[in-house]
Length: 170
Image (cartoon, rainbow, N blue to C red; front, top):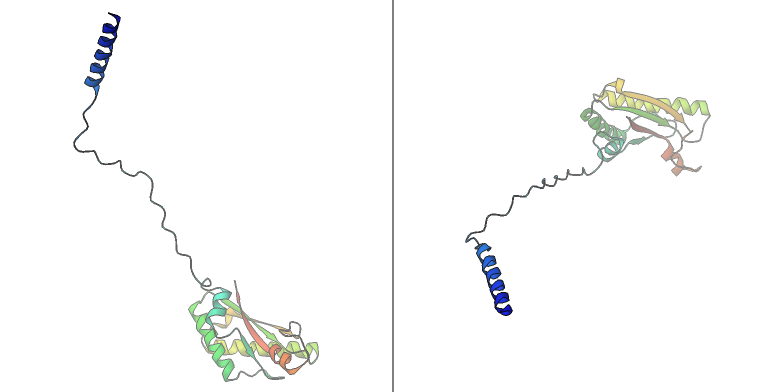
């Protein structure tokens, strides 16, 4: 009798469980919508130098330097080409200011070279102004022979040191 009651108990439990089971739907519901926010679009990294910076100036002009003959402050044809490219850049960025540095080689007295460096810087400034750059945006300074670009006491070094350099002011 005991086995009959166990069988009856197991049968009724199975029957109860089968009555509770759900039938699988014929069509499944759509998956839940994605609630994660979309990934931010990466901002493109600018290539090259920042527009209007000294690096942009260097990259955009034919040179930031012009060179002079011994004891001279005259602007020659090659210098005019360089200064024209500088003027074009300066006209593109009217808010930018520059300093034109005048330099000399090691020969001559300190006072002579400071005066010659000043004439060289002013010659470059005046040419830029003649090309339409507001002279109020251009300052000049003479370093004379105090900041050589090339060390040495030969014509090659001296030629590199007789120069005017245009530097942007931030």
